Image (tube, rainbow, N blue to C red):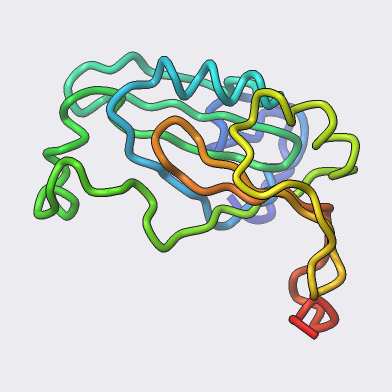
Length: 162
C-alpha cells in the first residue's frame, strides 16, 4: 500500500474506501470483548464513531471505532472471545487489560474532559502530569484502562517524567 496514489486507496485500518491517503497508523489495538452493545454505547458517548462493524457470528464479530486519529478495534462480541487460542488459557473472569494503559490523544483535553466527564467512568480526573501534559483516566465497560491526553509527539524526549 505504501506509495499508492490512486483515487480509491483502501483504508484497511478502518474498512472503507476514500479519496484520501491511507489512515496514518502502522499499529492498532484490538481489544477482546464478550459483548459489543455496552462498548458501542460507552464509546459513542465519548464521541467515537463506528467506522465499520461485522455482527457477532461465531469468530467473525468485529467492531472498529474512531475518534479523530484514534482507532480501537474490538473482536468477537460474543462467547467466542473466551475461545481465542492464546487467551483461552486464562480464567474467564480475568481482568481485561490488566497491566495495559491505552493512550488516546485529543485536540483539547480540557474541553474534551468537560464534554465527557459525566459519562466516561472517570478513574483519575484531569490533572497536570510530571511529564508536562494534562490527562485524565477512565475505565470502559469491559475493564480497559484509558488515558486521554493532548496531542503531542511521543518521540520527543521532553515528555519523559521529570
